[in-house]
Image 1: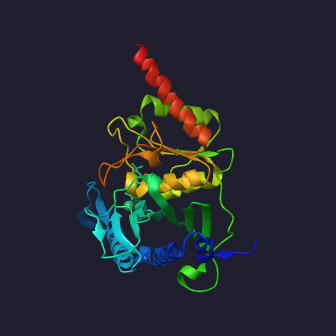
Image 2: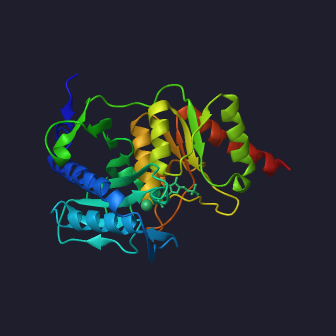
Image 3: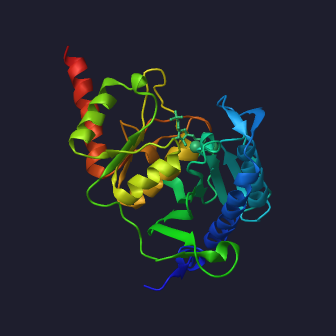
Length: 309
Ligand code: AHG
Ligand code: MN
Ligand code: MN
C-alpha cells in the first residue's frame, strides 16, 4: 500500500479537521526540537499542585497561542492552565495535555502530547462528543496516533517535504491485536487496592509482560501496538486515580475504542462520564475488551462479596 500523507487520511473526514491535525503535527515537531534545549524546572505549579517543567510551560504556550490564532479553534483547555482560553471564532474546541510524562525529561524517557478535538462543544465536555483524539509520541522516532470516526491511523515524519507534510502513514486503520501480551499499572503497589493486586496476579498468570515507563502515552502505546491492559487505577489514598478526564482519559479512551478496545473507569465507560469540572480525575483502565471486562467483573464480584458479609 502506497504511503499516504496525513492530510489525505483526514480529508475524507472533514477538510478543516485535516488542517487542524496538520497544524498540530507541525507543532509536535517544534516541541521535539525544543526538548534538548529546555530541560529545566520552573518555580510554577499547575492546578494539581505539580511543579511545572519549563517544557510544560513552553509547549502549553506554543500550542495554545497557535491554536487560538489559527481561526480553527474557539476554545482551548489545558492541563497546564487554570481556565479555558477562548478566541472570537473557530469551529473546534480542543483539550490538551501539552506534555505528557514531563517527569521523564530528566531521564530522557518517552514523552508525548495528548489532544482531544470537539466540534464546537464547550469545555469541559463528555468524551462521547469527541470528534477526534490524537497523541504524538516522542520516542526514538516521533509517531502520530490519530483517532477519527473511521479508525486509528499511525503516522511518522518519514516522508519528503517539511513539517507536517513529512508525516506519512500506511493509511490502514490500526486495531488492537487480538491477544494481549503486555500490561502496565501505575501508582505505588502499596497503594493498590486488593482488586488491583488480584488482577495484576491474573495478568501475570496469563503471562503478560509488565511494562511501565512513567509516561501515559509511552506506556499506552505499547498496549495499542502489542495488545494487553494499561491502568492508572483508583489508589487507597486517591480513589479517582491520577489521570485527568479531559486531558488524558477521554482522548486515549476514544482512541482505545476506535482501535477495538475498551476504556473503563472500573465501573463504566470513560467516554460516558459527565464532566463536573475541567480538572476532574478518573480511574482509568484500558486495553483489550476481554481483559478490561474481566477487571470490571472482578470489582462487581468483590463488591458483591463485601455486600454479602
Ligand atoms: P503529566 O506529565 O502530563 O503530568 O502526566 C504524568 C502522568 C502520566 O503520564 C504517567 O502515566 C503518570 O503521570 C506517572 O505517574 P507516577 O509517577 O505516579 O507513576
Ligand atoms: Mn499527562
Ligand atoms: Mn502534562
